[in-house]
Image 1 (spheres, rainbow over the protein chains, first blue to last red):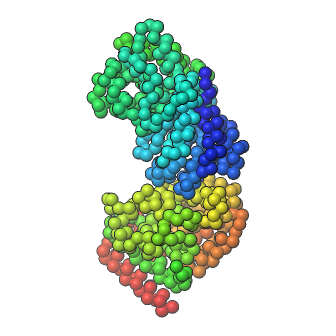
Image 2 (cartoon, one colour; image 1 turned 90 degrees about the vertical axis):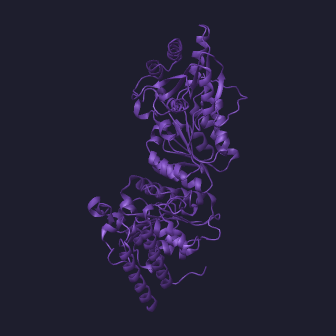
Image 3 (spheres, rainbow over the protein chains, first blue to last red; image 1 turned 180 degrees about the vertical axis):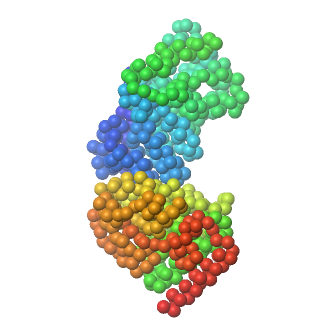
Length: 309
Length: 281
């Protein structure tokens, strides 16, 4: 098991701060949870504690960006999405070079329950025309993505996990913005996974190999821009496409892939693994993943039933 | 640019009043009332106060102005045009398809407006961010912002007042264009803000209360704001919605309706008359 991607963000931003003096980090009283704390200790003059004021924090970050800074603002993804109008006008429409760092994504956060779980963030953010919407699968990818975001122009949302995730990348991994990251080849079906579910899906596919199933795996770290060519290519190769995400199946990666497949008139049939249009609740992360079929066993069960039908 | 006299500033504001009304007439819709209440303040900022250069509009270290009450943007376009950022007649494309003069400020199409606003309560936060960047850069630049009194009902405004006060952003100066009306009626009846000055002072701001149509008072307040070193300044400016056109003054139907040709002509005639009276004084 690798570390949570929020920790990767914390490590990466504190390191990048040494080289890139324009980086500013803002947090709304969650620096211990979002892991912006290490940056705040290392560069107190470039860290702003904004109090429990997400909307003002978003506007302030836009002002800093307009003056040439590279602001990373941090909160739980749920609380950032909750200030969507400030994001759409002050950041999106104004093309502010702001990096919105949303941690505590999905039901994987566990016991705190629904109000703290970002389950609609991908759906909301990807409706903004210029918003890059990114979600790393593991530690190595999260750090590569952070380096990429220093040079990226325009607003970006990066979605991170509270819980540890399975590592799927090696140290020589090259992050390519907007491109599907093909991890496993397969002939019976392919899974398009994003975030921490990429590792769970990887293990599920390995399990099914012994049962004679050949399933491919593509990691969609970029929900926007979406690698449409990759989706179309796979739709011509396999009969079944499955998406996997810790997000509502409406509007996130599953929704985005459905749009591409429908417009292409592609023959492959889609099944969406995720939170099936219901609110989250309290429970251990393990119990919640088991209930929603997002753990390795649950994903393997779904893949088997989809491919065999 | 030599600093204009008080009388020249008044004349300039009147000239902009005429352009505002022409723009709104051409557009066929838009917001005259709140543009006319704000124009004296915006004129004083761009013609007297701010370190800006129309020949190099985005120069480093410039003073910046954020119009948080985005619907008052005809006042900003008229001021920028007369200050030399673009030709006055260009602004007559206001609200037309393809125009950079959008119905509310759009910094992508027209970067000199500094922020995209129109969803109320958001621009003041951008102004705070710009002021914080100026602090980091230690470049002596100042940030100005203008918001509406109705806008002050938005929660984000109070987040920003709390934050900028605690950060002691003395390089931030916000005008509150207190024209006493919002779409649904009188501010005091829709959602009363009083006691406004005391509220803002209690958020650790330096508050100055003026008549927002008296040029000498606007300039004196700006001088005072520049000399405060440990607090941001809020200039609460009592204004009249529709100021300068007698049939529009404090008549709230003029919040968001443009004049007909006859109304435009009548208004222009009155403004011309005001201007020649001022010139005599």
